[in-house]
Image (cartoon, rainbow, N blue to C red; front, side, top):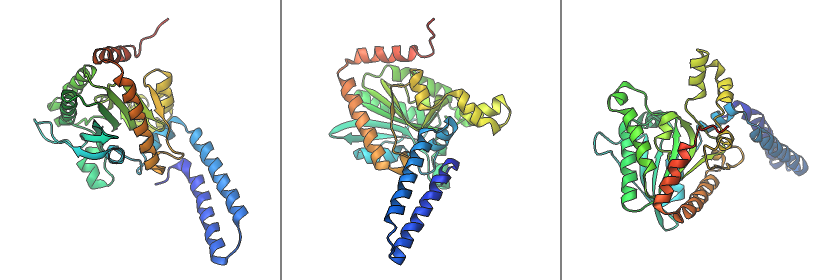
Amino acid sequence: MLLEFEKPIADLESKLQEMKDLAKGRNINLTPDIQSLEDKIQTLKKETFQNLTRWQRVQLSRHADRPYSLDYIYEITNDFIELHGDRTVKDDKAMIGGLGDIDGRTVMFIGQQKGRNTKQRQERNFGMANPEGYRKALRLMKMAEKFGKPIVTLIDTPGAFPGLEAEERGQGEAIARNLKEMFMLKVPVVCIIIGEGASGGALGIAIGDKVYMLENTWYSVISPESCSSILWRSWDYKEQAAEALKLTAPDMKNNGLIDGIIAEPLGGAHKDMQTMAKTIKATIIEALKELDKIKPEKRIDQRIEKFCAMGVVEE
């Protein structure tokens, strides 16, 4: 899958491959030309991805090849054991969670999961959790607290499922309860936005001591398309909406809404998933080392103060 702004790079890469095939097939020395074109491609990549618009970053966060929660979890951990069900309704496959080992330490992972093909997307409900998904997440958080295990959440959702049946089963209450309970968790909580972070669907598992965003992700109360449809009654103004919403990682950092930005490989996380996973793992380990030094009561106080300070304007 190629995004519009990636096409000039893809064209040059195609020419590079043709040049390499020509040199190999006819036994011609084209090394200087190949090196020159490779340098040109690298320069174009840097210029392109260092100057992405907000809408382009939104597109990149939704890239079909972008790693999802389970991709990272299996890459980061040893012996991951997925846990299922909310013990009330059913197992919501849009919300996943379980215990995994990171360098000898057991961590409770919770995250939203999308699908790669049509069947998987339907099974995972496009990463949009129902109330039972948020209740499963809370059950696993309480289990982690009971056994003194830190919690890491991976956020990637276009929003909580907005269907009538979800509202009938208490979607708003389930998310609200998660917010309240996450503030009071006695164990360290690290939240990482790995793709889309939309509305309460994202916030329902994003109350943490440390909140990070990958470089090419977004975090907002509403998607650019939905914002455009409300303000202009059309999706055609989604790019303007993205600019107005200021929803990218640098925007969130500048506004003091997140604690840090995790750099992605050039071209996006999907270009080198192993490297991206190593970077995320290192961020988690470093964050937990820092949080382990703080007493639980103080961590809770700092967590509450941190979120209560958001949106407060001092004159």
